[in-house]
Image 1: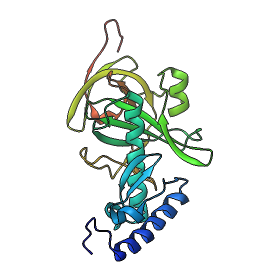
Image 2 (image 1 turned 90 degrees about the vertical axis):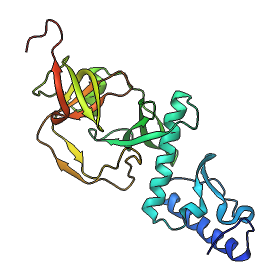
Image 3 (image 1 turned 120 degrees about the vertical axis):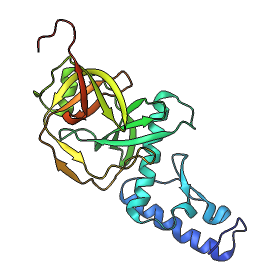
Length: 241
């Protein structure tokens, strides 16, 4: 059916059904939608969470449950990141990157949101008062906090304090290794940078045998890279190899 803003009887019936379906899907994951005004706008009615617009019923009408949840999730993650920086709302998000951390944690999942300005914002997903919420993670970068997130410091080919150049998403960054974490999980289905990477239902992983490094490049949360991503190492002055 082709929809206009005339809001025909047939369209209202489908809009009502779709609004109930989407509300139920989100409710199963403890996401409460704002009331959807399908009576006035039909299939063009906006779907919102706490006044944050996700999409219209028309945009969501052909999506499966998991895709609807992902759409909600990436919008809420992006909003939390932009709100953290008090950034303009039209600033684009390039990446939604889940981070593998030691369990259990006080939150459900940990994400790095990369903006078009290259700033990297840590966001956590939690359940509070029966609702799924997304908020800024206060990152201090001290050893205690890093150990809580990633486990005991590990050893690798490179060392703490090494200045390295890394390659990530076809770009080069230079920074200091501030932590070394054990071999972990690598996502095997990461999306392109233009569309980001996101999941609410789980991710496929494969094992990696090399250590991982947290590299502080002064752009927010450190980059988590595998040994193969380090393309150059410059030892700090007075550092013994």
